[in-house]
Length: 168
Image (cartoon, rainbow, N blue to C red):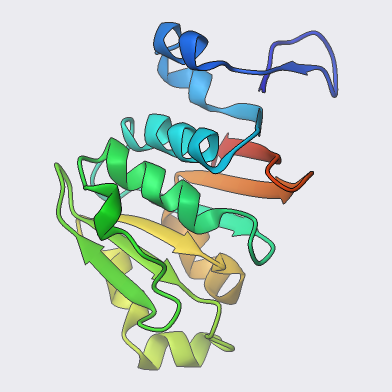
């Protein structure tokens, strides 16, 4: 659901039909509710279509909230086949080629800033890639220095998510 200015906590569901009409860049920022993984991915795709080289997207949310699903949507918006995008939980980082290179980090297993630095994960912030970071809390200062977008995903039901997208 996109906050339509009717007041705090009031939002409307963005249906598939409405998504085709809403194409002003500012319309991707706000509060949304999705009712399925596909809707979450579609929202990520809208954002991905607006991203440029060197943009950083920070994905916050509890385990299982849909951060990787949203990242798949971003990848699709960048021209990367969704099937190529998997969670880099064990590899820590995956690089994908699209209209712009996208580097996808999952810092769930990283416990300290020093670990991220030793693993060479901080180097991606000095490239021309779009960088999508799951669990950015681990290196938040480095991430925020270059971040353009912050996405917070909240679980509100088995398939429902509230997603807050803000430009930093």
